Image (cartoon, rainbow, N blue to C red; front, side, top):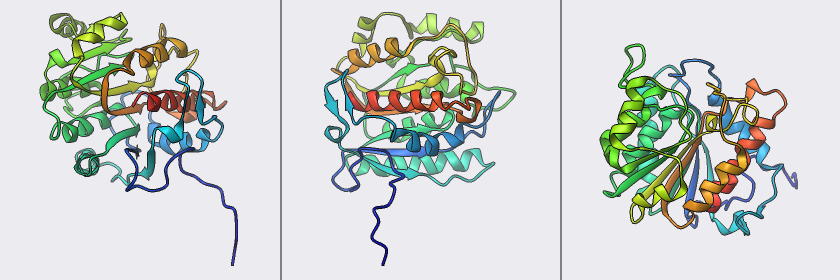
Length: 278
């Protein structure tokens, strides 16, 4: 009989018991609507491996991962080539998490995976709001005739929670019509205290890693120059720690475009710091 010890391929610092965990980390390896560089479906697996290069302690938040009490449930198995079925699988699994009084932390995958998460969570919280970190507006009605697209995820989510309950941070690319939508509904913000409009609401935080400058995060599907540094992003997280965050995800790492592995390491640290504020 083999006695080990054996390597753990789950996220470092997780609670191995689902039942006693508060937060469920869920891998969402889907990139079926990517419009530029595919490969984000490989991110959840690579992020788990890279997590073992981190410390469990965050000096920024003076907190250990074990204090977060999260369980890594692994990756969902999604049917390649079937967008609608994949979204259905995600929605049903996230719904099960909330039925059991837990919260989701999704790891994509492309940004469209956020939509079924929002659909599921909205069944449990009527005062739901979204804080959206991204380089891109993601406010199209469709892309190349396809309604279900990562370019349209926040527009579709706005139909669920209402535009007034969305705040967008870091946006620097999109169509003129999308920027007009942001202006009309005052979704785009630049200062931390502009988040105060969402105080008292249940917050879902979605982080598209291309919010970070390509000098920090080259391994993403649609890199966009002029982005944040890691420290700036974490300062937003620090402000959010006093909000009621009931779910989150981190999406759009495409690890194979950065052979150095640095983008994956950065993504992993983004995840650790966001876990600390949940």
